[in-house]
Structure formats: C-alpha cells, structure tokens
Amino acid sequence: MTLARAEQPEREAVLRLHGLDIARFLAFCGMVLVNFRIAAQVVPAGDMPSVLTNALEGRAAALFVVLAGVGLVLGRASRRQILARAGFLFAIGLANLTIFEADILHFYALYFLVALPLIRAEAVHLLGAAFGAVILGGMSLLLLDYEAHWNWETLVYSDFWTFEGFLRHSFFNGWHPVFPWAGFLFVGMWVGRQQLSSKKVQNRLVLWGLVAAVAGMLPGQFVTDPALQELLGTASIPPGPFYILAASGSALVIIGLMLRLGAGLDRLGLAEWFTAPGRMALSLYVAHILLGMGTLEAMGQLDGSLTTWEIFGYSLGFCALSALFTWFWMLLAKQGPLEALMRRATQGFR
Image 1 (cartoon, helix red, strand yellow):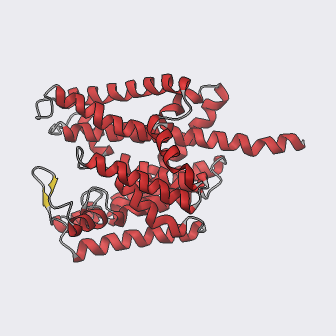
Image 2 (cartoon, helix red, strand yellow):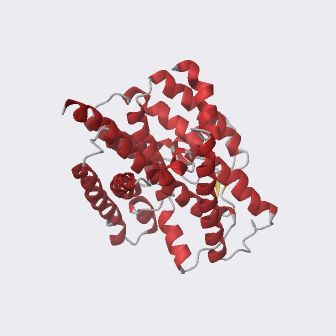
Image 3 (cartoon, one colour):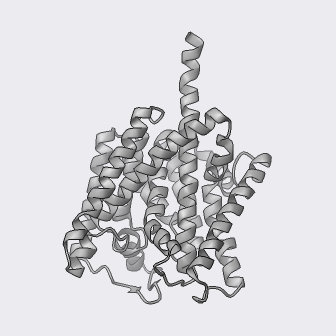
C-alpha cells in the first residue's frame, strides 16, 4: 500500500506532461498554418482551409503562451534560471526578427521578466495579474495610437530598432505585445497551480474554457461601429480584452482535452509517439521559419500565387515531417537541438 501511494504522484506527473506536450504540438501546427499563409501572401477564401486557418489566427500562439505559463510553474525553476532562459530566448528572438518580423520568442523573454516577481504567487493572485495585464492593454488601445509605425498593406513595422519603436512594439502594438499578451502567461501559471492529473480538474478546464470562449465572442456580435468592433471583438489585431478572454478559453479547452487524451494514450503505451514533437517545440518553431518558409522562398512561392488548398497542404505536410523528424531525433537524444543549447547556455544558473 505504501509503495503504491509513493508511485502514484510520479505516474500522475507523467500523464500530465504527456497531455501538455500534445497540446504544445497542436499549437505549433496551428502557428504553421497561420504563418505559412501570411508569408505566402495567400488571400483567404470561403473554403475549408481558410475557415480553419482564420479560426486559428491568434489562438494557436495564445495556446503556446498559456502552455509556457504552465511550464513555468511545473518546472519549478529558480528566478535565476528563468532570467537566464529569458536572456537566451531574447537573443534567439532578435536574431529571428531579422528574417521573420512576427517572431514571438523575444516576446516570451519579456513575458518571463514580467512574470518573474509572481513566480511563486498563489493562484488567485495570478488571475489578478492576468486581469491587470488585460486592463493595461485595453487602456493603451484607448489612449495611444495603435497604428503608429505600421504599414498594414505590407505588414511592415518601421523604426523597430529605435528605442521608442522597440518599446511601443514590445509593450503596446507589436505582433504579441506584453500588454495584454502577458495575461496568457498568467492564465497558464494559474492552470499550472491546479491538480492537472485530476479528471475533475480536466473537465472543469474544458467547461470553464467553453464558457470563456463563448463569453468572449458575445460582445462583438451586438455592435456595428468599426471602432467598437475592434475593441469588443475577438480579432488578435488589435488584441482587445474579449480576444484575450476568448483565446484563453479555447486554450483551456485544448489543454483539458489533451490531458484526458494523454492519460488514455499512456495506458495504451502510445503516449511517446504523440508527445515527442511537443518536447521539441522551440526547435520546430525556428525550423518552420528557416526550413519551411525558406523552402517556400526558394521555390518562389511567397508572391501570393499559391491557392488556399496548396498552402494548407504544404503546411500540414511540414507538420507531418516535423513529427517524423522528432521521432527519429528522440532515438538519438533526449532533447531537441535548441532545447539542448538553451540548457547548456543556462546551466550555470542552476
């Protein structure tokens, strides 16, 4: 009896991580679908690929950030380790920015810095921090010029490398600004404070997520004024408060469902096949830019000539190849190449 009780927490931790890794790979696939379409300048149509990709826009990246918050809590890293990881991600992100302007990695670093004082906070305080980030973001939309530095026709942001441009882009009107996007990280940290191995908690995540997703979509349905639709709608640009609510809700639904799925796959002995890609999310994220978009550029397909079905097929193919690559890679190493590099670069802070 004593031995069984001692082994149970360890088994529950394995099940929990399997579900989170599966969710992380789904988030990666969603980002591939969105980013490849944007990079290839494919005009959305009313077909199935467009509908699906439109639904994922702003949601896949949000799920990524929520999962990062869960990882911060479950990883139990020290503040020095988190600071070191933030520095590593910031450097990688700035390098990535030179070829992909919608980079999210340097934003991760800033989210981590904002979350650092609350890394040991209670769950209720984390929800309060998420609410505060959303309020700051909403107030910024009302008081500041969101369109400053943007060319919406080319999606190019000018003067990023100036002090004022960097601050404005990072904290207010960039692709994933700290306010309100840090709210996703705090929501993830709140999730990490829950007993995720419990089926009741998993079911509640799905239920609460559905409620939040529906509640976030409702206000925008009752206004016709374009300015109010931007503020009350669920588009990720600009990121209004109801976008944060709806995207947080969809993230909770996916996490809850994947935790249930991870437990079932573990009992069947299949979990490792589905979790390996999620454990290499950092490496795969960079690969989808360097290799995925790089291949499209080499083929001369970044000119809007592809159809929605063609870019959809290319995106799914890249996701499938990514999963296949990680299965072979994990036979040789325990971590992805960039994950191992980050570990080595920050091991002095352990």
